[in-house]
Length: 616
Image (tube, rainbow, N blue to C red):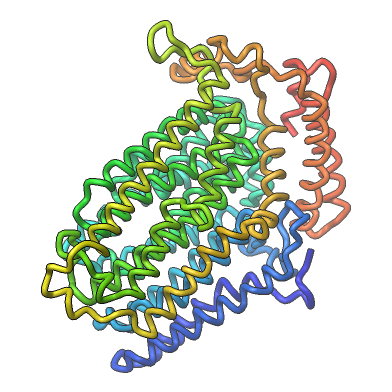
């Protein structure tokens, strides 16, 4: 599908902030208010430019769309790199959330940022372009450039405008992110070399990666996964996050929680998981365990924090654990819930950091012990903040409930969250289905813990006696503060009461993603899930003696997989046709690709000999 008049709205929205940053560079630093207003204007224009992407989006189409002619062109011919951007149901809402929050984060710093105002707003605008570009890149070299570009302005926001320990937090963020980025770059270059060094296209390198033997897929997945799981951050890669949040200015914390952490979960579902389906099925229960640990650990640690900002930072570890659990459950409800929870966390946690920033501007402290009873002097603030807290806690009717509910239900239905016959407690074993339910039950405990620490924070901050003299003169929300808090409150209710319009635009892409993984991966049939073959294969993999065919094939699903192959081939062919500029090329490729998938997964024999079709 193309946008009317073939206007490149994606490119316009991505690069408008960069244009604003370039113009701000020519405005003298002494004109601080001009920088604030210009930054606000360009963030607002970027949001307006993203609206046609929503109105022009075809919810029935699972593939990439809204790519204008000039948005799929040769970029570096010698390397086979292209400027190729597009949007599907997975990236649409994350892109719109980013543009929606742009004016809000600028407005939140109007009074707080008083030094190096020019450089601050340039950093915000450059960061906006980098984040938007990463969400729409369909060329891995282009994606990697945007990914690395995000690090520079975020490092500056923390290191220049952060708190007392800002240098330590900024350097820690830089080291963690760079380690993951280098691993991802190694994986990209490996696939590029395996593909004949001819293209960095996401579609092409996905084909290359899916054709790799099991061991190679595991190493490629590990390289991508570490990079993305650090960004999430999943336990135990989370230690950089609390420091970064506490030291960052309010705008930096909002961007970090609402957008940058989503780069990790987005990278998993866009790159790591479709590229290496066999490795995904193999590693899913292990990542599920880390996710559950993160859910419970993050909530428990949040409960004992005395710094409000650090409490909310640890809550992100817990909430994002739900997202990774949902993704690797590989069931439709869980993946839908994970994508919705991505958005919900961005709205609710972004609102929490904005509310904390409002108090910090007045009192210059974030210690829980310094507050209490402020609802008496700031009733409007207390109302807004309480709604956002309830949204974060997953109260029904607000934005946080739907995603967590779907993830828990979907995790209980998962076929990937099981360890076969592995015994955890001596002779006591959990069967595959019971293991999935165990994951869901443990995750649900995180919801209870989340309600506890958030209600504890609310009680200590808003209610009780107003004993601190410094709080008795606090002013309630100003017009500017209402202007950036109210949209998040409204969105919390809108997404909580009417989630279906958001989910509808995800459904086709989620179905396509599941078909992509399942039609290219072998799976257990129910009656052999309890054997220990998987763990013999795991030990062989650890010893670099792994079999390229690690699991028995699910025979009863052969016909379904054949159908997936045909459908995938047709869709995949259309995408390739769009990319290479020829409908015939795309159709031929689609037919061949569909036939290969059909032969591989849809034959009656469905044995190891038929797996030759996986070579594409």
